[in-house]
Length: 167
Image (cartoon, rainbow, N blue to C red; front, side, top):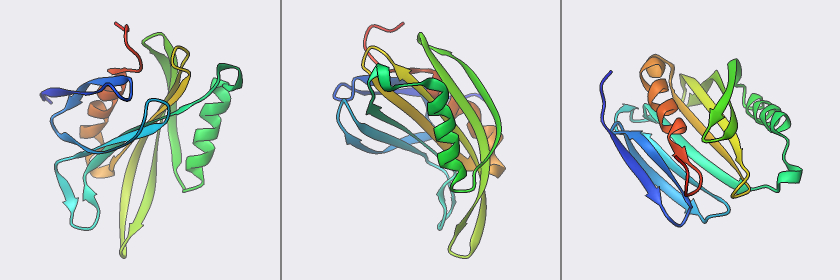
């Protein structure tokens, strides 16, 4: 699938996302450099009740390095999302800009106004030692269009720059 991208940049938050597909637009921003959230949604709608076919957000919060344990943070995120009946299908890890990240994929059923929507979920997190922030990246899409939107969400995640001076 060919697509063009745009760059999200906000100096107040001290990070930017280098490759966001034109299928997405910025939805809302809250917070500051230490704690906040920015969300994006697809321009295409599923229907009038569910809304956008796909959405993702980046959330960050301060965390001291001595208080952070990557394995525990990953397990806590899986446990937290399991509380809303998300079934984790697979889990991977890797490196993004010299930071170890974990990414997991899951699915759930979402009930909205007597309708059932099957949702595919992507959740990733990593810790930035330089800014001492835990950064979480969460995306969801209707299961019907999951194969179309997953690469777009992954590309946006892997292009995230959490502080200046990164390559």
